[in-house]
Image 1: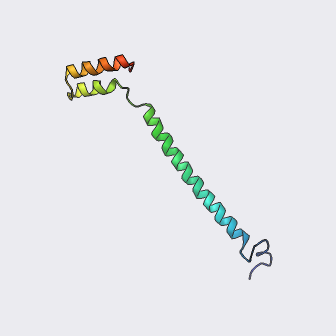
Image 2: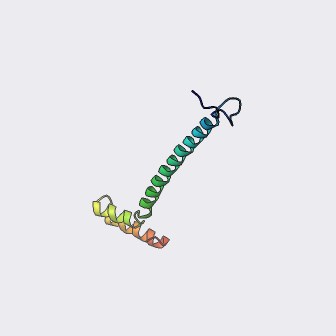
Image 3: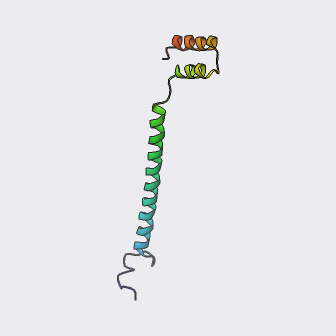
Amino acid sequence: MVCPGFMSGAVGGFPLMAVLGLGFTALFWLGLAALVIWVVRTLVDGRQAGSEQPMDVPKRRFAAGEIGQAEFEEARRTLLERGAS
């Protein structure tokens, strides 16, 4: 049995509560998606804030034996001239 007031407020016989329910469900899922995106972006930006300095790259490569002392000195000189630390 359908309640007599169930269809009241409906336009063209379509229940208003169904429209509101779909709208709030969509808002919930959009809000949840936005929250997940915000959390991921915040975590990624936080990691990038602590990333290595320009001078750390030649130091690491020299320590690993990827570049020789001459290349390291040249990179160090270039970075110091540019004001990178």
